Image (tube, rainbow, N blue to C red; front, top):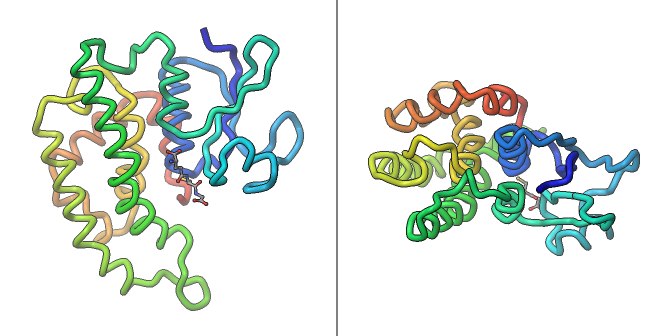
Amino acid sequence: MIANPVHIYGPSFSNFVRTVMLICEEKQLTYTVGFEVAGHEIPFKGEKHLNWHPFGKVPVLLVTQQAAELAIPETASICRYLDGNNDLQPSNNLEYVLHDALCALISIDIDKVLVREYLLEFAFPKGKDNSVRFDVVKSVQAKVATTLAIIEKKLAEKNALTCKQFTIADALLAPMLHYISCLPAGYNLLTDYPKIEKYLADLMTRSSCKKVLTSNRL
Ligand SMILES: N[C@@H](CCC(=O)N[C@@H](CS)C(=O)NCC(=O)O)C(=O)O
Protein backbone atom coordinates (compact mmCIF):
# COMPACT_ATOMS: atom_id res chain seq x y z
CA MET A 1 0.00 0.00 0.00
CA ILE A 2 1.51 3.30 -1.13
CA ALA A 3 1.20 6.18 1.32
CA ASN A 4 -0.41 9.12 -0.53
CA PRO A 5 0.49 11.78 -1.54
CA VAL A 6 3.84 11.13 -3.16
CA HIS A 7 6.10 13.84 -4.54
CA ILE A 8 7.78 13.55 -7.94
CA TYR A 9 10.97 15.62 -7.82
CA GLY A 10 11.66 17.09 -11.28
CA PRO A 11 10.01 19.30 -13.91
CA SER A 12 6.67 18.22 -15.34
CA PHE A 13 7.93 18.69 -18.91
CA SER A 14 10.53 15.89 -18.52
CA ASN A 15 9.50 12.73 -20.38
CA PHE A 16 10.55 10.54 -17.45
CA VAL A 17 8.72 12.71 -14.90
CA ARG A 18 5.67 12.36 -17.14
CA THR A 19 6.06 8.58 -17.08
CA VAL A 20 5.77 8.63 -13.29
CA MET A 21 2.83 11.06 -13.46
CA LEU A 22 1.07 8.65 -15.84
CA ILE A 23 1.60 5.78 -13.41
CA CYS A 24 0.19 7.88 -10.54
CA GLU A 25 -2.84 8.78 -12.67
CA GLU A 26 -3.42 5.17 -13.69
CA LYS A 27 -3.05 3.97 -10.08
CA GLN A 28 -5.18 6.89 -8.83
CA LEU A 29 -2.46 8.03 -6.45
CA THR A 30 -2.35 11.64 -5.28
CA TYR A 31 0.90 13.33 -6.22
CA THR A 32 2.69 16.64 -6.45
CA VAL A 33 5.45 17.48 -8.95
CA GLY A 34 8.32 19.95 -9.06
CA PHE A 35 11.56 21.13 -7.50
CA GLU A 36 9.76 22.51 -4.45
CA VAL A 37 9.44 19.96 -1.67
CA ALA A 38 7.35 20.77 1.42
CA GLY A 39 7.64 24.49 0.71
CA HIS A 40 11.41 24.46 0.05
CA GLU A 41 13.15 24.67 -3.30
CA ILE A 42 15.61 21.78 -3.60
CA PRO A 43 18.31 22.85 -6.08
CA PHE A 44 18.72 20.65 -9.16
CA LYS A 45 22.05 18.78 -8.79
CA GLY A 46 22.54 20.32 -5.35
CA GLU A 47 23.78 18.26 -2.40
CA LYS A 48 20.38 16.89 -1.45
CA HIS A 49 19.47 15.95 -5.01
CA LEU A 50 22.84 14.22 -5.48
CA ASN A 51 22.20 12.27 -2.28
CA TRP A 52 18.94 11.07 -3.81
CA HIS A 53 20.43 10.37 -7.24
CA PRO A 54 24.23 10.27 -7.48
CA PHE A 55 24.16 11.42 -11.15
CA GLY A 56 21.66 14.20 -10.47
CA LYS A 57 18.92 12.79 -12.68
CA VAL A 58 15.20 13.31 -12.40
CA PRO A 59 12.70 12.04 -11.47
CA VAL A 60 13.24 11.06 -7.87
CA LEU A 61 10.17 9.84 -6.00
CA LEU A 62 9.82 11.11 -2.43
CA VAL A 63 7.56 9.12 -0.14
CA THR A 64 6.91 8.87 3.53
CA GLN A 65 6.90 5.27 4.63
CA GLN A 66 6.47 4.26 8.27
CA ALA A 67 7.40 7.80 9.35
CA ALA A 68 10.65 7.64 7.33
CA GLU A 69 11.38 9.83 4.29
CA LEU A 70 12.25 7.63 1.34
CA ALA A 71 13.85 8.85 -1.93
CA ILE A 72 13.63 6.42 -4.86
CA PRO A 73 15.68 7.20 -8.00
CA GLU A 74 15.36 5.74 -11.54
CA THR A 75 12.09 5.91 -13.45
CA ALA A 76 11.46 2.19 -14.08
CA SER A 77 12.21 1.36 -10.43
CA ILE A 78 9.91 4.17 -9.26
CA CYS A 79 7.15 2.78 -11.51
CA ARG A 80 7.57 -0.73 -10.09
CA TYR A 81 7.41 0.65 -6.56
CA LEU A 82 4.20 2.55 -7.32
CA ASP A 83 2.72 -0.51 -9.03
CA GLY A 84 2.66 -2.37 -5.72
CA ASN A 85 0.05 -4.93 -6.77
CA ASN A 86 1.64 -5.39 -10.22
CA ASP A 87 -1.46 -4.58 -12.21
CA LEU A 88 0.58 -2.56 -14.72
CA GLN A 89 2.89 -5.53 -15.37
CA PRO A 90 2.22 -8.99 -16.84
CA SER A 91 1.60 -11.73 -14.28
CA ASN A 92 3.08 -14.62 -16.28
CA ASN A 93 6.78 -14.99 -15.42
CA LEU A 94 8.20 -14.98 -18.97
CA GLU A 95 5.99 -12.07 -20.03
CA TYR A 96 7.02 -10.24 -16.86
CA VAL A 97 10.68 -10.60 -17.77
CA LEU A 98 10.08 -9.57 -21.39
CA HIS A 99 8.16 -6.51 -20.19
CA ASP A 100 11.11 -5.68 -17.96
CA ALA A 101 13.46 -5.94 -20.97
CA LEU A 102 11.16 -3.75 -23.05
CA CYS A 103 11.20 -1.11 -20.29
CA ALA A 104 15.01 -1.14 -20.34
CA LEU A 105 15.09 -0.83 -24.15
CA ILE A 106 12.72 2.15 -24.03
CA SER A 107 14.34 3.97 -21.13
CA ILE A 108 17.92 3.44 -22.35
CA ASP A 109 18.30 3.02 -26.14
CA ILE A 110 15.05 4.51 -27.41
CA ASP A 111 15.21 7.49 -25.03
CA LYS A 112 18.83 8.16 -26.07
CA VAL A 113 17.93 8.66 -29.73
CA LEU A 114 14.41 10.11 -29.57
CA VAL A 115 14.87 12.39 -26.57
CA ARG A 116 18.55 13.08 -25.93
CA GLU A 117 19.71 13.27 -29.56
CA TYR A 118 16.57 14.60 -31.29
CA LEU A 119 13.91 16.24 -29.12
CA LEU A 120 16.33 18.05 -26.80
CA GLU A 121 17.72 20.06 -29.71
CA PHE A 122 14.22 21.53 -30.20
CA ALA A 123 13.63 22.03 -26.48
CA PHE A 124 17.03 23.46 -25.57
CA PRO A 125 18.54 24.65 -28.86
CA LYS A 126 22.29 24.97 -28.85
CA GLY A 127 22.69 27.08 -32.00
CA LYS A 128 23.55 30.76 -32.30
CA ASP A 129 21.20 32.94 -30.19
CA ASN A 130 19.53 29.78 -28.92
CA SER A 131 18.35 28.74 -32.36
CA VAL A 132 17.65 25.12 -33.31
CA ARG A 133 20.60 23.58 -35.15
CA PHE A 134 18.63 22.13 -38.05
CA ASP A 135 21.78 20.58 -39.51
CA VAL A 136 22.14 18.60 -36.26
CA VAL A 137 18.44 17.68 -36.26
CA LYS A 138 18.66 16.54 -39.91
CA SER A 139 21.77 14.49 -39.22
CA VAL A 140 19.96 12.57 -36.47
CA GLN A 141 16.79 11.90 -38.49
CA ALA A 142 18.08 8.66 -40.03
CA LYS A 143 18.75 7.30 -36.54
CA VAL A 144 15.32 8.47 -35.37
CA ALA A 145 13.75 6.70 -38.36
CA THR A 146 15.60 3.46 -37.52
CA THR A 147 14.43 3.72 -33.92
CA LEU A 148 10.82 4.37 -34.95
CA ALA A 149 11.01 1.39 -37.33
CA ILE A 150 12.05 -0.77 -34.35
CA ILE A 151 9.03 0.49 -32.40
CA GLU A 152 6.74 -0.06 -35.42
CA LYS A 153 8.00 -3.67 -35.56
CA LYS A 154 7.42 -4.15 -31.83
CA LEU A 155 3.85 -2.91 -32.33
CA ALA A 156 3.27 -5.68 -34.88
CA GLU A 157 4.24 -8.32 -32.29
CA LYS A 158 2.55 -9.67 -29.19
CA ASN A 159 4.11 -7.94 -26.20
CA ALA A 160 3.45 -5.54 -23.32
CA LEU A 161 2.90 -2.61 -25.71
CA THR A 162 0.25 -4.44 -27.70
CA CYS A 163 -1.68 -6.13 -24.91
CA LYS A 164 -4.97 -4.54 -23.78
CA GLN A 165 -3.62 -3.71 -20.36
CA PHE A 166 -1.81 -0.37 -19.83
CA THR A 167 1.74 -1.22 -18.73
CA ILE A 168 4.83 0.53 -17.40
CA ALA A 169 6.33 0.11 -20.89
CA ASP A 170 3.45 2.20 -22.30
CA ALA A 171 4.04 4.85 -19.64
CA LEU A 172 7.72 5.03 -20.62
CA LEU A 173 7.13 5.25 -24.36
CA ALA A 174 4.04 7.48 -24.57
CA PRO A 175 5.65 10.80 -23.46
CA MET A 176 8.48 10.43 -26.00
CA LEU A 177 6.14 9.64 -28.89
CA HIS A 178 3.76 12.40 -27.87
CA TYR A 179 6.53 15.00 -27.95
CA ILE A 180 7.58 13.86 -31.43
CA SER A 181 3.95 14.13 -32.57
CA CYS A 182 3.98 17.80 -31.48
CA LEU A 183 6.90 18.71 -33.78
CA PRO A 184 6.17 20.67 -36.98
CA ALA A 185 5.68 18.91 -40.32
CA GLY A 186 8.91 17.44 -41.63
CA TYR A 187 10.15 16.84 -38.07
CA ASN A 188 7.23 14.79 -36.75
CA LEU A 189 8.51 11.55 -38.23
CA LEU A 190 5.65 9.48 -36.74
CA THR A 191 3.61 10.14 -39.88
CA ASP A 192 5.66 7.45 -41.67
CA TYR A 193 4.66 4.81 -39.09
CA PRO A 194 0.92 3.99 -39.08
CA LYS A 195 1.11 1.53 -36.18
CA ILE A 196 2.85 4.10 -33.99
CA GLU A 197 0.29 6.76 -34.91
CA LYS A 198 -2.60 4.41 -34.07
CA TYR A 199 -0.87 3.29 -30.84
CA LEU A 200 -0.44 6.92 -29.71
CA ALA A 201 -3.99 7.88 -30.75
CA ASP A 202 -5.37 4.94 -28.69
CA LEU A 203 -3.27 5.94 -25.67
CA MET A 204 -4.47 9.53 -25.99
CA THR A 205 -8.05 8.38 -25.37
CA ARG A 206 -7.07 7.48 -21.78
CA SER A 207 -7.77 10.14 -19.17
CA SER A 208 -4.25 9.75 -17.72
CA CYS A 209 -2.64 10.57 -21.08
CA LYS A 210 -5.04 13.43 -21.80
CA LYS A 211 -4.15 14.99 -18.47
CA VAL A 212 -0.36 14.47 -18.47
CA LEU A 213 0.64 14.58 -22.13
CA THR A 214 0.15 18.24 -22.94
CA SER A 215 2.23 20.06 -25.49
CA ASN A 216 4.37 22.10 -23.06
CA ARG A 217 7.95 22.20 -24.23
CA LEU A 218 10.22 19.31 -23.34
N1 LIG B 1 18.21 6.55 -15.88
C1 LIG B 1 17.39 7.68 -15.51
C2 LIG B 1 17.46 8.73 -16.60
C3 LIG B 1 16.63 9.95 -16.23
C4 LIG B 1 17.02 11.15 -17.09
O1 LIG B 1 17.85 11.08 -18.01
N2 LIG B 1 16.38 12.24 -16.76
C5 LIG B 1 16.71 13.49 -17.43
C6 LIG B 1 15.46 14.33 -17.56
S1 LIG B 1 14.25 13.60 -18.64
C7 LIG B 1 17.71 14.23 -16.59
O2 LIG B 1 17.72 14.11 -15.38
N3 LIG B 1 18.56 15.02 -17.24
C8 LIG B 1 19.51 15.84 -16.56
C9 LIG B 1 20.91 15.33 -16.69
O3 LIG B 1 21.14 14.30 -17.35
O4 LIG B 1 21.79 15.97 -16.14
C10 LIG B 1 15.93 7.21 -15.29
O5 LIG B 1 15.54 6.25 -15.95
O6 LIG B 1 15.25 7.80 -14.46
